Structure formats: C-alpha cells, structure tokens
Amino acid sequence: MNRKSDRRISSRIKDFRTLEPDARLEAVTHAAGIEAFSAIALSGQTVLGLDIANGMIENVIGTFELPLGVATNFTVNGRDYLVPMAVEEPSVVAAASYMARIARAGGGFNATSSEPIMRAQIQILGVRDPHAAQESLMAERDKILDKANAKDAVLVDLGGGCRDIEVHVFPETPIGAMVVLHLLVDVRDAMGANTVNTMAEALAPFVEEITGGTVRLRILSNLADRRLVRASVRVPTDALTTDSLKGADVAQGIVEACALALVDPYRAATHNKGIMNGIDPVVLATGNDWRAIEAGAHAFAARSGRYTSLTTWEIANDGALAGTLEMPMALGIVGGATRTHPAARAALDLLAVSTAKELAEVVAAVGLAQNMAALRALATEGIQQGHMKLHARNIAITAGITGTDIDRVANALAADGDVSVTKAKTLIERLKPS
Image (cartoon, rainbow, N blue to C red):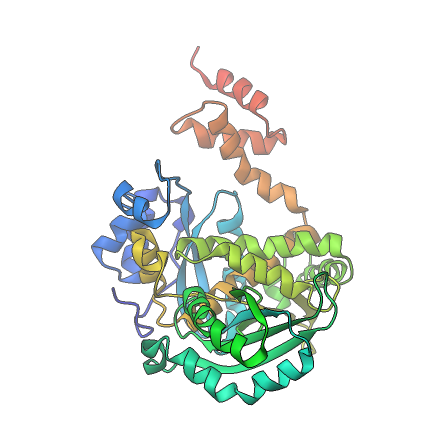
C-alpha cells in the first residue's frame, strides 16, 4: 500500500454529505488516490472473512459491523487528510467535518508529538531495603538496557529500543514495601505492547538477581505519558458567526463552556467523552487499541490528583479562538490488527500516513475538532438540536421505514421536534397514498 506522506490529498469534497454511499466511495477513492483493493475493503464488501476473524481472537462465531464514515475538510500541519471513522453515534462524523471546515479559515490544525516511548513495569516484592534495591537497579542500568535490547534486535536496527529506566519505591502498600522498575522503550511505528511486555518478562530473572526480591507483574502501562501528542487550532471569530450570533460571542461561549470542565470533574467526564467521540472512531478504523487510548486519556486527565479537561480554550490576543489538546497517544501502523484486518489496512491507506507519530497527530486534531463542535453547540443552539436531526434517521429506521421514505420521515421528525418511534409511525401513515 502507498502511505507516503507526499501523496497529495484534497479533503474538500463538494456536496459529499448529499451523495449516496457508492458515490461517496468513488469520490474518496479519487480524492485520496487509493488502490482499488483498498476501496473495496472500505466498502465492506470483502472486509473480514471468518477465516481471518478466527485467527484474530478466540471463540469466534461471526463478525460485528459498524458504520464506516469519512470525515472531510481536515488540514493538519498544512496537509489535507480524509479521515476514516468507525462509529455508531449520529452527528460525530458530521460535527468533526464541519469543525474542520471552519478551522480551515485559520489554516487548519497544527500538531506535534513526542518520541514513541512506552513504559514496561516490573513489580518487585519482598525487598528488605527498597531504597538500596533502587540504587542497585540504577547501578546496573547499562546492563539492563543491553539485556532488554537483546530481545528485539529488529527494533534496535530500526532506531528504537530501550532508552532508559526509572525506579519507583512505594514504602507502604497493602502488601508491604514495593519497588517498581520502569523500562522506557522507543517502539517506533508500533503501538508497542508486545515489545515492552517481552522485554519486561525477559528481564525478570536478572532483576531478581540484582534486588534479591521476587518479581510479580511484568507488563506495559497504558498511561503513556512519555508518548504525548499536542494539537492546536486558531479560528478567526468571523468563521464562527451564525445566523443569530456574532462570532466573538460564540468564541466566548466556547471558552466559558470549557471553563466548567476545567474545574468540575462531573462536567470534565462528559467533556472528555466528547473528545473521545472523535478519537475512538479513527483508532478503531485503523485497527488500533481504542481501550488503551481511553485508559491513557482519562488517567492523564487525572494526573494532578483531580480529574479535569484534556483541552483548553481561550481568546487569543488578536481575538481569535485558540484551542489546544494534549494527551497520550500510543498508536501503531505496523503489527496487530493494523496488518491483519483488511479494512484497517485500507483505512491507513486512505489516511496516507507514513509514521505512527503522524497518525497520532491527525487523530488528536480530530479529537480537538470534535470538542470544538460540542462546545460550539452548547454555546449556541444546544447539543440536542443538531444531534437529534441526525438521530431522526435512526428513529425512522427503528420504526420500520425503508428506502427514500427514511429521509422524508426524518426531516419531518426534526421539523416537528418530536423525534420518537411513535411519531415516525404516525408520519409514515400520513405519507402513504390513499
């Protein structure tokens, strides 16, 4: 597959939302310049046969599908991206696409990321003098690094490998004193779980020899706080103007809505869930571990001892709305489902990312866009108005309505303000010819 960053993509596709699925696929295929087999995989026609599924997990009885949409309009670091999103919730893809379009007025999103450093933890119990054990481990740092890197010569050849160690002492726990050795491993373009777990398990006997203790847990941490991504956006207030509100008022409303999430964990939980509404679908579509990303995000949001917002929004000196998102982002483009699942491979082909760092930066931009969409809705017409317009299609389908009648009934439901199955059944009766 061609995932070279020099492949030029236009994320602006005229009237994309109004096209039928086949026409959307054709438009995306043309805009992204992807191969025919990727287009077929994205369409779901030959995505995941039982033979492949049976090799991916255990006790397979079938497969479970989600809608796969494409978020348009995204510009990240000056480059356009078409973003695949696997999600069941209405309004997510539309909201991300719309905010990305608004963000283009300020040049789109900018994003940076740190090196792909993952942690492995080795828990050591039964140590008489924990601080002495800490000193002993630090004294053997070079040998520990050598033994860890000996377990993955390919990674070392690619420029990765175990870079450093940390030793943490917990003098009092429910089971007594504890020492925990951290391996800090550059995993390059992999998510890295298998790599760091293998290193940790291989080092256990040597760690016991150094400390005189007993090694228990040997596993990665999903709080990937050395593998951070930061996305930012600046939007001129004119781009935020609505039919009833000035852009400056919308911008101020977004800042005020974010302020509650900064100080109140009850709001922060919902605020951050909205961010993950954008992030999880891309992570899922590309075959990455969305549960690991969720765990890392929420742990990072609570790193100060108080759960708070992952984003900040403020009014810049020039009056523009400025937003930032910072969080762990442990993604891979090699190994695991990113290689075995045909649709995941096709999704990466559509994105045309060359490294895991680039993927993380795009995903963070989508999360920031989704957050902006939610805050903008809250600051203007309220979250339900736009969401329920899109949710009306689901209600129409639930009511048994099919074909072209779905949109007719959905539009009528939204206009009436009663988005319910009962109302949908009433409307379809009215639409039937007498």
